[in-house]
Image (cartoon, rainbow over all chains, first blue to last red; front, side, top):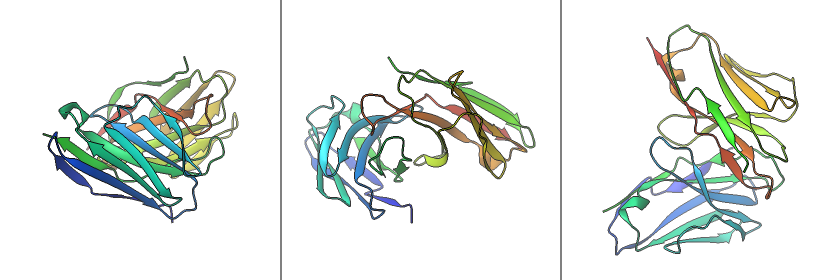
Length: 113
Length: 112
C-alpha cells in the first residue's frame, strides 16, 4: 500500500483564520515532507521531518507551522495567511535513507481570500 | 548551485507518436534521479534511476540515465491522450539526504 492521505482536499480560508492541513501514511516511512506547488510550477520543498524531528525548514514564513505528532502523522498549521499563499500543498513520505522514492499524497488545494 | 533542467518545457504531439523528454542535472553528490508524472493532482512515481546505462521500462514508458554526461531521458512510445501530463524530473540535494530538487517539468499534450 503506497498511500499518503491528505485532508481536506480543498480549503478556503480568510486571512484571519486558523486552519490545519493533515497528512497520514502507514508505510512505515520515517521521513515526511510538505511541498508547496503554485500553478504551472514544480513542487517546492517547505519542511522535512526525519524520525519525527524537523530536519529542514526552507525559510518558510512563520505563518506556516508544521507538526509531526507521531511517525504516521504530519500537520501543517496555518494562521494569518496571505492570498499569495494560495496553492496546492503536497504531503509526501519516504524512507529516511538517501535517494529513496518519495510518495505524494493527492494534495490540499488552499485558497486564501 | 545544484540544478535540474528539463527540456522541452512543453511538447504537443499526436496519438501514436514517440516522444523523448530530457533531464540534465548538476547535482554535485548524485545518488539517484526520479521521474514523476503529474496530471491534475499529485505527482505519481514513474522511475528511480541510480545506475548508468540500465534502462528501466514500464509498458510504453522507459528511462535511462547517463551519469557521465549527467542526463536522463524518458521515452514514451505509441503515445495516448492519457499520457498528457506534466513530467517532472527530480534529484536529491547534496546537503541533505531528504531534500529533492524538481526540474520545471515538461508539459506533454497528446492530441487525438
